[in-house]
Amino acid sequence: MSWIACSLVAAFFLGCYELCTKHAVRSNAVLPVLFLSTVCGALVWGTLLLVQAVSPAALPAGLIVPSITWVQHLQLLLKSLIVASSWVCTYFALKHLPLSIASPIRATGPVWTVVGAMAVLVERPSWMEFLGIATALVSFVCLSLAGLKEGIRFHRDRWIGFMVAGTVLGAVSSLYDKYLLGVLHFPVATVQAWFAIYLVVVFLPLAFGWWRRWWPRNEFHWRWSIPCIAAMLLISDYLYFMALREPDALISLVSGIRRGSTLIAFAGSLLFFGERNGWQKLPAVLGVLLGILLILMG
Image 1: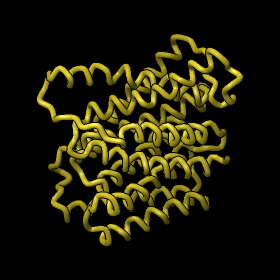
Image 2: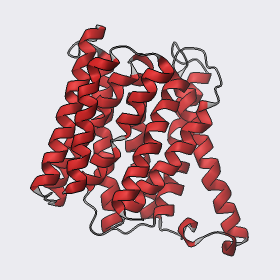
Image 3: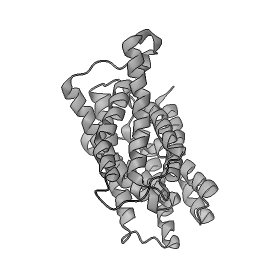
């Protein structure tokens, strides 16, 4: 599968991930959702590591996790810390904001990734690809501005600030992914496995603090969408990492295509959560589609 196809399929599953996340955190305690969903993901990779230890031949080559040094473990722990920080911000924002507003803000991540890729990795997209990224990002901003009709003041709402912070941290994570996979040549399975396991380690103190009531907190309710968060993210991330390993793949373009997940999240927010102003947001959604098409044509 080409890196463009991988990015597109990853976008679909990422959109499903956002819908599952919104369902899980709505009127629910956020930290237990984060912890339990990461535990579900870690259990998948823990099982695969156990199978590998007992019978390596039983697994396809793409799921084999080679041994790594302690320095490499620290590099993957750093990725987990970056992503955990991003998720804490975005999960709390998703709980309090309409998904049709939060997802487009989250989708502006490629603009930060483009800036970082041009500054740090010296990537230079073609003019058509750059036009596509610009069109998609302008559409994301227009879609976000529709929140004003729903009483959300961007310069005053702290949850907008949380989403922006989580988005910037997500862009940092994307650049770091390209470094791990494209420069250091980590195998995809290695990054996913240890990233999933270290996420549990990072979130464990927060979950323990919530359980011990170290701060005022909401009650937790188990929902079927919690393990689905892990499943959708595992599939999306695996395809995303596969795309990044391709020598011709530009991180700015992979991230831009992957953020087409906003279309899935937007449609789901109207269909499943009954969010308002769908028609007013539709032109911006079509702008997102145009941007992605321009990226693919480039």
